[in-house]
Image (tube, rainbow, N blue to C red):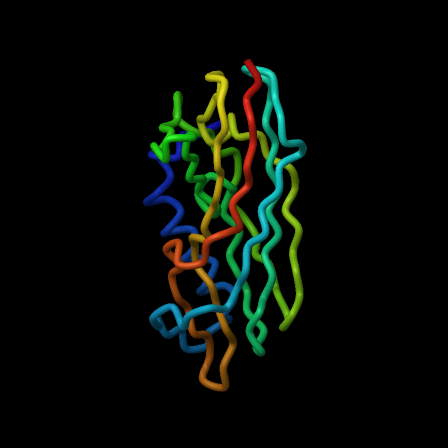
Length: 174
């Protein structure tokens, strides 16, 4: 079963809350503000030039750059790592269709300095189809729920795109 991104925003919050409770195992859960620069996101494309309509695949890596262990609840890429695509004029490209999400589950446990490499994902899964020839810049940001175990329980926070990836430049050939 596939669901649209717009259908899952509320579901994602509920699932995240349930996961937090399960992870805490009766520990105190505190909702805290996002503490700041904890992660870096490295984005890469499978290549740099594409024919119009050719699948464009991206891969992201998330690194814990803090000195503390953190977990990030897994959300499918269109929600966890939303794309920002700009054309050569700096104009935001809008998706041509609704992105599709197939599952929500799990979490990434990241020790200080640890990196998780996410698999290749086609931008069509985000609802994008780049068919106009030209140069494009793609970035992403980290969104979702992060957690840190403390002596009192679990501190939980929302990430709303504060951490941005490197830009990836691609070209759609004429």
